[in-house]
Structures are given as structure tokens and as C-alpha cells.
Amino acid sequence: MFTALRCPHCHHMFRVQPQRDRDTWSGSLTRLCPDCRGLPSSPPSVDNAALVYEGSTRQLVSDLKFRGRQSAARALAAELARAVRADGRTFDVVTWAPTSATRRRRRGFDQAELIARLVARDLRLPCRCLLVRETGPAQTGRSRRARLSGPAFRARPTRTPMNVLVIDDVVTTGATLRAAAHALGSAGWADVTTLAAAATPDKRQTPARSRTVAIAPD
Image (spheres, rainbow, N blue to C red):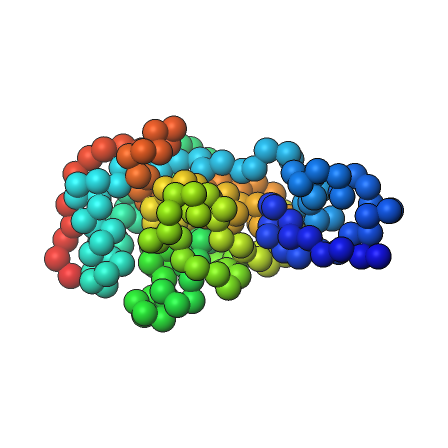
């Protein structure tokens, strides 16, 4: 008899045969799909955020997401590029954690993609769409408990391990970027670093900087 389970890491459904696959069947925390069993037991963490999501930074994000102000994206991308240079790590490619299809249609663009492409241009790196977001609710507007489960992503596989920088606009619980990093790691990408433009103040472990960001007129 086969039983279908949902992997708690990548959220994909997979089949197990309880009598044969006892290690996978015993205990809810060990019910991992075959692709995830060989990965490190601890989930990827959010590496950094350039700014604190308050004051002028919060206004920038709102201007971008709800008013389509392109100069806000340029200002946020400049802060992200500055943070990458200060950190000193090098990357082969830049990608982003895509928003839901519903929000992309409503806004006419994906704010994370827009920021990521500007960051990549500033750093003179290629920007590629490496992640596909599975159907599900957007993180914005959900309770903190609901957001902790995170969205589900599929990553494009690679035969050549490369260092990837994943960009997002705002990190709250970190679930979105952890899910994105896990999907990329499962698909064979070598080293995955996640970086958000801003972190909410309650995410105190994220070393974001509190500063005023000025923007140029569109």
C-alpha cells in the first residue's frame, strides 16, 4: 500500500510504502521526500537585509508595490548592491523570490524581480528566473503563524553548480526566502545566499541598517 505525503521542506507530494520505507514513515518531522533527505537537517536562513522596514524605507516599499514608482525600486536596489559589495562575497547569478501570480497580474510587475534586475545590473551580473512559485496564497496579509509555513517553490535544475544571490523586497518571518533557498539547493545550485531589501523591526536577528533613503524623481 502506498501513502501520499507532503514534504515539510519543499511542500511537494510524494509516495511512500510504509512497510518498506520505515525511516520516512516514522515521525512527522522525518517524512521528507527523496530529494530532501540528503540535504542538511537545518533549513537555510535569511543571510541579511539592507534596511529596516520602517520610516522612509517602508514608504519606499509602499510606493513601489502599490503606486508603481520605479524610482523606489532603484533606491532599494542601490542599497542592496551596496550591501553585497560591503560583504565581499561573489556570485555567478542573481535571481528573485517570485510573488504570487495574482499579485503580479494586479500590479503589472513583480517587485522582487524588478529590484533583482536592477541589483544585477549594478553588480554587472546576469539575472535569471530560476524559481517558479507554486499556486497558493500570497504572504502579505496572512497571520504570522500562517506565514511561517511559507510558500512552495520549484527551481530550475542545473548541472553546473553556481553561487546564487536570491533577492526579495521585505522579509518578515523569513519563510519565503528559506523556501526559495531550499528549492535552489535541491536543484543543484552550489551556494545560495538570500538578501532582502528590508527586514521588519521584529526580525531582530537580521542585521539590517536603519537609515533614511532618498529617492530621485521619476
